[in-house]
Length: 380
Image (cartoon, rainbow, N blue to C red):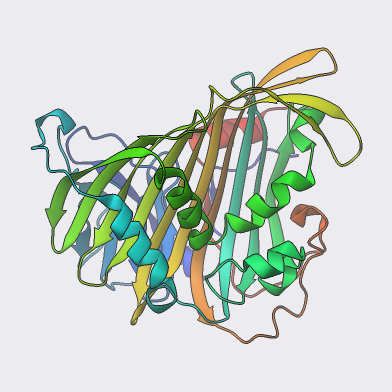
């Protein structure tokens, strides 16, 4: 692939856009995945804390997990967010029972998160590392249609995922594979349910509750401002999985607006598996992190971002030992109400989305690469 410039302006709207850098107000370091919401648009910062944002003079909101949100009335090149908690060790310990909060959110899920058919313009970003070296990267624009915001377990039992979620590939912006090997493409039906389930927060919330119900767990109120609590939690499950995380809880709406869950599975025994093409391999679990971010649209909450990372996973196959690290992100740039009909040109769910035929769309996202991503693209 030819060398590509660092900044890609993909729409006429982007012609009037400028870069905004979101930083930590205490350290000055960039905040990856900081969010800007304005009118019908939700945008997220790259790993360098940069967002390409239209300078249309309209006010916008800036937020990030672990930071106080800000309302911005005019364009600024640098926006510093203040941490919700400056020093975790100095926080007064206020215990809080997180299980009733999780139970209540799950019980009223259909009332607080938009739960009718909807379609989103999204950006998929995925990176894979092999033995600490960036090995592959893909960025694509697409559409996602969901019949509701809730994972349907009955449909999943029938493997009818298309009735819940459909995807349409609009354009592959970047696709490059370096020193990736075949282990990165191994697939197994065992992962299929988790893959589709990960797009639905109620699936993660159900899993989270199943892990803490019969385990000793603790919750801690870290901060509270403007009716929103920042709460941490942790537990050791009976399956040798260490679990901890942090979430933001809006007390008025009784909704989780942001959550980050870490699963430390390194003490689990290695597992022998078989890929779809019959290859056998051994899999050692590592540490997985799942992040969901929501913003309020009228009287309900819609997804803004979903992120899933895996680190310190080890694959043993073909006399090779490969340490794996991955990062997958879905950014929901726009939201629109839809119908139960789904997408007209949906991709075949049995195949990799990036192999689907591209569907031209008038809406194109602004893709701003991080320095690491740009250097990888520019490699011969």
